[in-house]
Image (cartoon, rainbow, N blue to C red; front, side, top):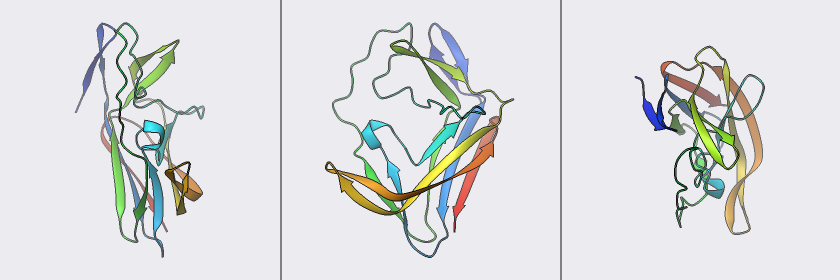
Length: 159
């Protein structure tokens, strides 16, 4: 499947999709952070070979270069320290489009199928409230390597 995104006066073709899945097979519940500061799913991030984090959404109020500035939404998804009991899983899908900052705007580009990316999965063993927002505590992270192209699944099992 190839997705096309119109940007900056030209089309950006995605090499496919990547679905990230975190599964809890441990003895106790775990927690994953979602939607912190309107940033989307924060329990998984994508790293390039040089360890730079990939921008996957362009930011909630980011303007694509060459386009008119957009109005920021007044509301966003509320953050959550989502609980995953033993045997439960969560997933999110990325369209393999990278958003790179360029001054005050972002430039979308397709992820390179020749590169080896890493998914950084993070979860915690507890949750708390900080400044009125739920946060995951005792955070642990692990990485899984992957490449883009077609429909890819990247799975991490927590034991």
